[in-house]
Length: 144
Image (tube, rainbow, N blue to C red):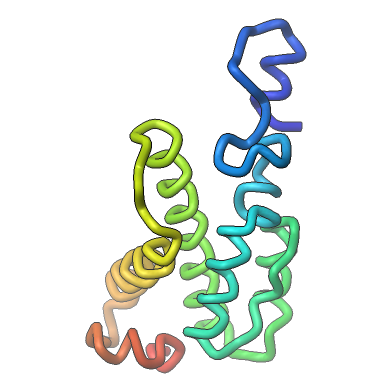
């Protein structure tokens, strides 16, 4: 169950339990990071960039399970997981900007921000090897 539904169920006045960006579903982790069309767009963009198949699913846990089942080294799986987590962070920031700041960001920015955040995360987490920004853009899995 999601937090907003629980609050509404307990009689706490909230404007809506519907996801404010699409108004098609109750706001939940599965919807925001899985079945929401912007999330699907982000996972398709990340798949294309990584040149691996990230299974677009309706549940983020299934997305991470698909990373776990990839036939790549553990180090590469960690890089892909970092990119997935940064994708979730970017989607959440996009959602908050739209809801609280009436943001006018385009969904294409989410992929750019995912790439940038994941570069910072991975490049600062692996001290033994340095990868330039240009190398990261062209082939992030060659980092390990």
